[in-house]
Structure formats: C-alpha cells, structure tokens
Image (cartoon, rainbow, N blue to C red; front, side, top):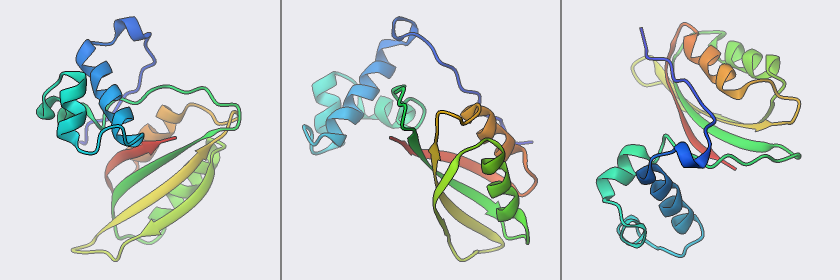
Length: 147
C-alpha cells in the first residue's frame, strides 16, 4: 500500500529553521535573485542536499480570495476511466481544472500533469489529494507548484 501524504498548517515559529531556509532559497530562485541552486543555498546558509531533500515538501501558505493554482504530476495505470475518476474527484472538491496533459503510456503507466485552480469554495485540498492517491491505479502524486 502506498504511503498517504498528510498536510498540516503550522505557525512559522513551529517550523524548523532548515525548512524556512528552503522556502527562502526557492523564493530567491523564483525571483531570479539567485541564478543557481548553489547560489541560493549559499545565500540562505543551507546545503544543496538539504534543499533537494525538502524542496518538494514545503510551500508558503498564501490565503488568496481569487484562488490559487496547484500543479501536480500523477503516475497512473493506463486504464479506461481512470482519468475520468481523477477529474470527478477534483470536481467533487469544487476545484477548477485549468490544464490537463497526459503522456503516451510506457509499460502501461502514463504521466498526467494536472493544473487545478483552488477556489475559496474548494473543500480541503489535502483531502482531495489523499482521495486521489487512494484510487486504484494511481502510483504517485507529486505537487510541482503552488501559486
């Protein structure tokens, strides 16, 4: 059985310093104040290995009345109806699908990139992702970006 990710909202003072520095390094890269990961990690005072270890696991929390976009990559079996089930889950949580890109399956496994607009009316996003992860035929879900 695949490990199910759980998401938490915590106050900044409860977050370990290394994770806050990873967020800062990512901000430097996004704003182009640092060109390379090495430059960003040097500026914030962490190792590149710490950056790579945590970069996909921490994001700043932004409350946004207009909504926010979450882009994720899913590895899924090439089975009829599985994409439909995923889209149904997104709809059940009142999120808006912005883009869908599915690769040609290789060895029976396809890669799906999905961008979803999370609106103020959207129910619990972490629960939506957990529900998607539990579906038969889903190998993994990785959140690429949150805006």
